[in-house]
Length: 339
Image (tube, rainbow, N blue to C red; front, side, top):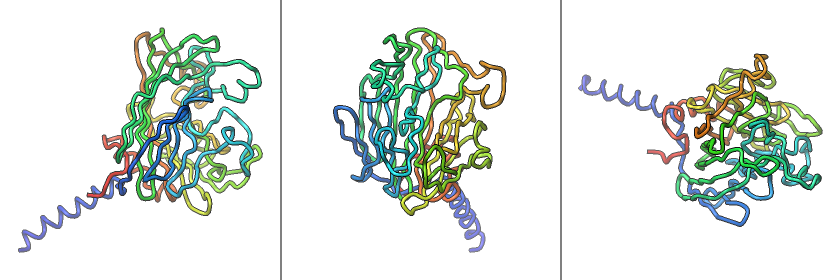
């Protein structure tokens, strides 16, 4: 009897340890609605975000609504006059992917307010097509885009795949984007102005800045660097957390091990800019100018994959490091139904 009991007990302990290592959440139903300028995304019939592909110099996700049903990104400049929000950096549009030097063109600084004021189009990422949407416990959206210079010439194209998930206390976006050097070589230059980014709600900022109010936030990365010390550091993930509408919430970005120069550098500012950037090596480390530049040869590709986790509590409560380990080991990181 004892000899039979002990192996079973050991198996149970091992199973519990394994289960604790991989965060699991009750699955939810993801649905899409296609409109003329966007695709809306809902979780169990509650708004999550929209993939907005017209009216901006690049496709964006706006708003980004967390599991407590509060927006976790800044609304300006998409929505103006929101109390507590700063009006700096109008090119910081909720959630986006661009870079400040692509074959010498600055896609990062382009924003709709400047385009309207100057009556001209600068470098921009133009929507191509929605390839498909697939609803379910994991909602999949695939799209294409063209990166255009100010004179309309195509610099490169991209294909992107966004997988949305949700469950108790968490919402996730597994974001993959592949740059195609199908119009000649493509060089991403060495600048801190990039790349995979979002602008957090002012309450998630560690300090008020540029006219914002209501900061309650804390930045922490996988190496344990906190707030301003996380800027420019290499890390597997970074998390911003604070109190929004009376609830403890946060948002993390996880860098995939297959990405260029993983663990990536982070342009993570206390005023709310939150960006993964493998190219800004000179700015982040004081290396020689150009040290971070990377060229995709003509006909080649470069893929970036990140997981965005909107969660209740802080990074520890959401077990962000365990989620990174599970996702990087091959699990998709999207909430799954409990076994």
